[in-house]
Image 1 (spheres, rainbow, N blue to C red):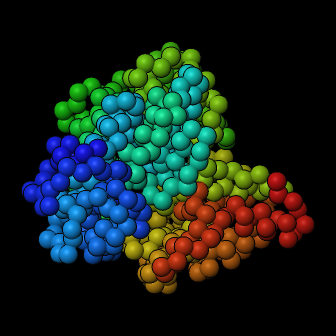
Image 2 (spheres, one colour):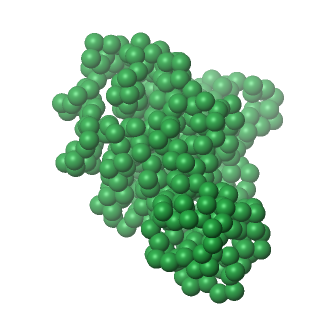
Length: 481
């Protein structure tokens, strides 16, 4: 793309050293710059991209987008007030507006985003569609699976992924849309065919400050959607209904809505319900699974997918890895891995386990460091009310004092009747829980889910709960497939 064409798509103040040059791709990572690329200087939370402008030029950058005055730069510099916005605008131009050629479905909310995306993907594939997926656990492009670095990638990364999906014949892309991505312009300029709102509960207040700000960030998605799918039972969903929408579809379990589930049956390993004359089965337990299924059904119905394909697509999937995942173990007790790391997430999974667990509930959990600390006592209290035995341990402490984190969690559990211990090493906590488990017990490993690492200090340490459980049984003389 010619620089003069790029400038037509960006809100910019000036362009120094203007030249009619050819640009290639775009990045905000100076280490990823290739000859001809556009380098965008982002003033981030840990470092300022303007410091790396000279490095980007030496790597072959054809031009640089900046918001601060640069010195000793000979390539054209485009100055703008907001480089995050400019990154999104330029990415849309560089990748030729991929959302006009791909039906993109966005799912947002505190809990349920990942599972809803996988349910939608399964339904669309049952209908014979080629589907890409972008989410917390992984990105799927064709037959390629890429480990996810964050829930929603940066704008230029999204542009490249969309473009690759189109090249591989995809008609749809279903993606998780985080509040951070909406606030930081990562999804700016994307035309979503549909957007779904699952719920809003206490999370990410270290970034947003208040629940009102958190909601306002989430609500931005629905200004970008052809059809808005909203959970009418959620209090923040009700507030979202007050906004203007091009097209609005609601779903619920309790209140009146366009799509209210009826005759709900909660089984130990599945849910069943009726909706608008059709019977649906999803092989994931819990009342929250009814809500996730409803969101996926409403999205697909709004996009014209046949009811029979929706019924089939739901029945064929078990959702995402690390979401209410029951491990196959050679024992007479259960081990469940779940990503629950918020008060509401813990409440949902523990309530589900409580309904069907014939024995004790043994919960291993912690709270992430450098995140909203207010929710920690609440998480402890919820576990204390539902679990018989709990082990408070590390999640991703990062650079925060682990003893402080665990103490804050403990403040919420200590006045409950739950027997608990604090074990700072998570692997030790898991092994202790497995040794404690007896016939008919359920061991719930909460918080890590799909993650195969721990963030300790500045290090990303390999850590797989599945492998720890497997190793435990191998050492005990049982082979775990």
